[in-house]
Length: 435
Image (cartoon, rainbow, N blue to C red):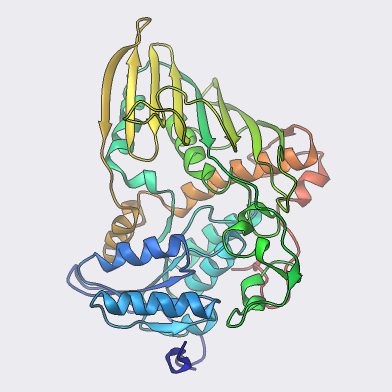
């Protein structure tokens, strides 16, 4: 890649607020950080919006960065500025917002730095690698009066929003249980040796807050999801979407008890996180008990409640969605935008809808309005859902149930569990206590 495109931003000291937008016709200048996988979806979403400019791209892999720059330019858009270090990007006061699609271990720190630099933030799910980080990101969003959207896309689809309204209206009666299903065919990742990073990969920047460790391809592009230092397993990858829907539909926040078990079955490879996991959460809010059950499966499985079934009648493929159980029926949610209801003892078809929407468009609208209330997936809602995922993983890793106290945000009497709410950080990449 031609290095003249790696720009040095202004060296003016101190973080200042980005220019405030005066109207819907003002151009919102967005930087996308982490652009190999999901970050490309961010690029395409912003590129399709009027009065939104992709002002900069940032990635630690120069080959990925070069390809994306060419992609944007080939679409007829102006060539964005290019960075490998997000800290340099954040010095550019002309950038209004950053959109983060890096590995999980970078999400919260990058979001906090962006808030401190006066940028609004779209942060991919999960918004944190552990519970402490998420809480600090919420604090930063509020302290610096930033618009921070969480990447749980279903919050902005018309189908899902209507489905949640129907649950509140009592379409299936008293909702006592929700299930999240993450049945995705995940093959073995095999084993890869430790080696020198490929040319053009700024590996120390990629590690960021994570512990220093030699490079291995199985801990880099995408497969970082399956290593505890960087990812949170499939419950924190695909699963956090369904976890958020489960909690949204039940209308709850924090559980009183969490229990999770599972394992890494069938494959002998480098994966650390479970490929099969069941987590159960008990809630006691508004004087009533409710339960949430979440399940990850990694290989051949049946479909449930019609979720994931193919239109050609053939079997196979993923089953990703939710089921809500009530006193008068059940609701099946397929993906992010489709719900169906089945009512009464005869399970007669009830209200249903399938219609999408854009979480990125909602974010840009809130950036313009400066109203946190306009966000469909405000960072605080995202953080609460991520806490559930983190508690499930802590329970799984410790091999025991957790009694959670939402008042103290701790597991009383369990110092080992509480220690896993955070972790040590490398110098220069510390998630700050005082944001």
